[in-house]
Length: 597
View 1 (cartoon, rainbow, N blue to C red):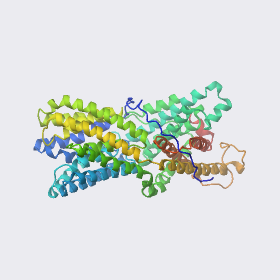
View 2 (cartoon, rainbow, N blue to C red):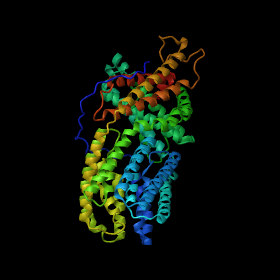
View 3 (cartoon, rainbow, N blue to C red):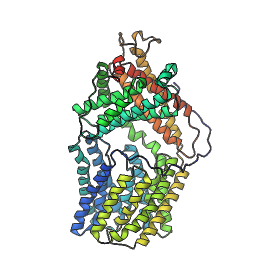
């Protein structure tokens, strides 16, 4: 295999789509969990401060309380660690902001520090893949703290309040585990089963049962079959991989988790043999995973259990827990540098333009710019459209609610809590819909130190929104991400190496290792690779294929980019999925028959 880089001619500027940016999606299956969590995490500290007559300190308590928004998809063992790191990161960011604010009142310096913090938040959250809501919460809190009047003597007390609220947010985030300890793993497994069922349906639409023949066999092996079929297979492979990662992060293996592992194996079997899989049964299992009902326990087959055993053993020592973790901090920062530079430049320019226009809160423009930056320019453009629309509608909502909120401090706190709930309940439908609630919430938070004239707040917010969106997007256009194409080449090389390694192991386990033997022809009789070698290779190949698809999608959305090797990507994905199917078939006929059991 040659690892030489392919050279591609530059392509014309890609069009930035407008249609679809405001389209509503289906709500998340757990939309109510972050919504309720943030209400409890924010409500208790704020109501306590209200009772003490110190609502002016609510900014610092919210620094810790808003950490409850993170890590809702992680198993509780991993969630506890992730939330602790989120709280620690928030405290570090707030400490830098408060110390800076206490040392200088220069708005120019404060904007510069805020932009650097925003870039650091973007890089760290992308690197650790902490997930929604990403860096924007860190940037919102730290930027507001930069412009809050402060002395050095006040910093320890404000940080202590943030830490106490963060500890409460940690407890709120972990509390559901007392009722449903395997909830995140159950949801991840259900998503894998549903995605596998969707792939089986897509396969059946392309290759009807009565017309399959050789063409259908080619499609089952992963060869060319159509874009819908390809997307469904890639989505199912990613969901299965995510389910295994969730099960790995869960730690110990009690009975329910072992049953979940068997269900994920069934999803993998469906990817290998879609023609022999009943999608209705996969969906029934996924449906039964809701609530606190017992985990469905399909009858295990002998070879399915063998596959399950090596799968679990190898996940603990596989690429996700081994070299990948060691390389993440040394090599992972490279591809993120253009995004971090975009964020720093865009936030700084947005803040300075806001200052030049005489707006009293330039950090709003800074936060707007920071919220735009996504994996590529196309997604950044869509986020900009969503942000502007959501904020403009949100200020109208604030104008309507302001008289009610100004009835007293208690009404102000309750209105903020209602908007907290609404933001998290709606944001999974579309970012603009969540922003409709985020905008009045942010405006009301600014009034915790005292009621203000609504007209001035609305004017500042509209100006800062437009400034942050326009200037932030111009900065994103100016800082091109030409490394995205190189990342595809790296991902392609990784997939090809992983596929060739897995293919060699398949051949080594065949009787006689002859080239004419099929992958499911039986167990090898001579000396060959270790019992878990093939499964280790399969896990590495699956992870490499998921990373290739994510990298290609990200690079495809860049505005100015050389032509991407789309044909090579397609062929690599087809060959990789064909090899994955062969590794499952190599476990023996029972693992495939078990899909129909």
